[in-house]
Amino acid sequence: MSTIAVPSAAGSGSAATDKFKGNRFTSDTSQERAAAIYKDVLTKLSEVIYEHEVTYDEYRVLKQWLIEVGEGGEWPLWLDVFLEHFIEDSNSRIFSGTKGSIEGPYYVPDAPNLGSKGVMPMREDEKGTQFIFRGQVRDLDGKGIEGATVELWHADSDGYYSQFDDGLGIPTWNLRATFSTDAEGHFHITTVQPAPYQIPHDGPTGEFIASYGGHPWRPAHLHLKVTAPGKRLITTQLYFEGGQWVDDDVAGAVKPELVLHPEPNADGIDEVEYDFVLDPV
Ligand code: MBD
Ligand code: FE
Image 1 (spheres, helix red, strand yellow):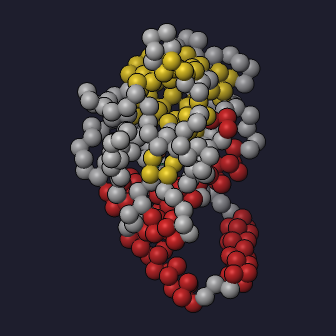
Image 2 (spheres, helix red, strand yellow; image 1 turned 90 degrees about the horizontal axis):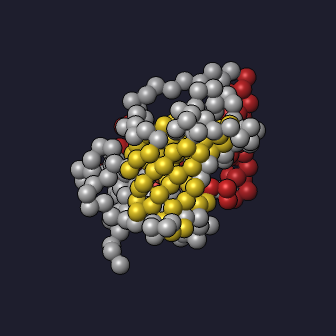
């Protein structure tokens, strides 16, 4: 057994805050809609307060914790783990293509494009079992889409994402790449199988989890963004059948349609085909 190094909240979680702050987001939410949402949020929060008779001690601990999450730069981490799956699921119910899942805090755009077939950028001594992930991107009518982009990013076998690595010096685009499908919509990717993953839990997010007796584990996962001109972008994740934590993801982001079943190919290398179906925009 190897010891699993765990990314720190200060080093990895807060790097996500710095990246996020590089953007300025807006929403065209009307005043009426804002009023309706805020009123509902407060009403439902008040119901929780009365139902559990939340104490002043608990209120002060909450206030202190909220301040610490912000100061520690852990809001992207906490929000993406505990809330994003509701947002994703609620927004994707009307679509019929491949299921989405949460983006999480560690996406970086513009990873190098390796064409339709390639090996993920990795270190010479990258740990983990080699794994082939291939498939086809199609429209709702089943027609393969040429030039669709498949962005893939995942953690290394110690649970580190490049660019959020606690200063370990992992190469910038390690285990991050973009692929473009061939004339029939196919892509073919060689990478290493990721390991189960502990979210950084040495800060306030970890305190939150410990306070209710939870665990910080996510199942091993691949992150993907798949899109094509005129098609809806899907952000999703794929998991591995029988893997630890597939049934108990701290981030609540597993869907049965997103579980892979790799099997050894003729060369004895684990391989799996997974096809993506894109809704029109
Ligand atoms: C991750 O890698 C992740 O996917 C999520 C959702 C939260 C923290 C780290
Ligand atoms: Fe992840």
